[in-house]
Amino acid sequence: MIDERLLSQKFKSFWNELLPMLTPSVVHVINTCDSQRALIEDGKPLGPVEMSAETRDPAVIAETGYHIARIAYEQFVHVADVVNDPEMLGTASSLAIESAKRFSTEIVDFSDGLSSLEVREAMRLAYRQEVYRASLADSATARYALNLPGAGFLSPVQIDLATSHFLVEVKAVNRNLTSKDIRQVVTYILLRFMRDGDTWENVAFLNTRLGFVYEFPTQSLLRSLSGDKSIVELSYTFRDFLFLNDVQIGESRF
Image (cartoon, rainbow, N blue to C red; front, side):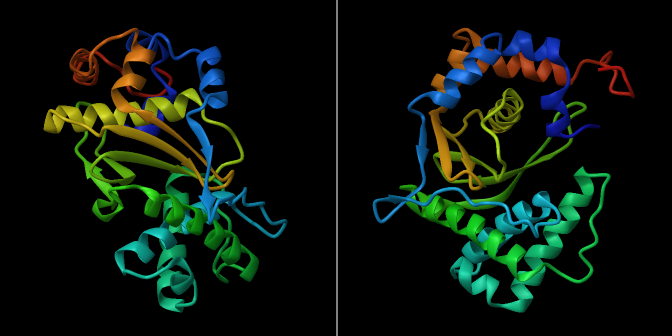
């Protein structure tokens, strides 16, 4: 079994067949088009979150920010309340460290906890997530860490954030959108369609580090990247690939 991150990075010939229009030039256009907008509060852009020189592991800080926002929403408080509560903040940082361990071979020692500057950085990331989530018309339906069953050799997946109408992929990185990010979200869309016969109306790529979000109507995004194939066609191709008996997922066989 493999996870959706690895699936989005490998199997290039399959992805080229499924999404033939997802080329570097198209990704460049996506990164410069009107679908990108700044996160706004009180009519002003929130701006990026600069990485502190004291930050030991950006991935841990990013995950801590995500979990601060999640806990705040689930406990009906604001991100500042989570940061000011040692127990809730400890839970957020512990979950972040465990998550980072699953995806990194270089483990930073956080036995002494996060520094005050690292906590502040994570809080600023979380706040941008809170502002964006609250801006969604159906924010009351939001769910964090939404699980979807896998298929074939793909493990079950967990989605960062979703509402009734929006799938939100949360990033906190110093880079623009990549084809890998798009493939990962397409994976979520098709898994949801395979399970429910339906999917989210819109897709959002939220980058809390840079302070902006990309938003797309799901059907338009899929059709533009697939050469005008329907989601039904795409889901059949996706399912058939995942259940192929002769796909080798061992070492160096992608």
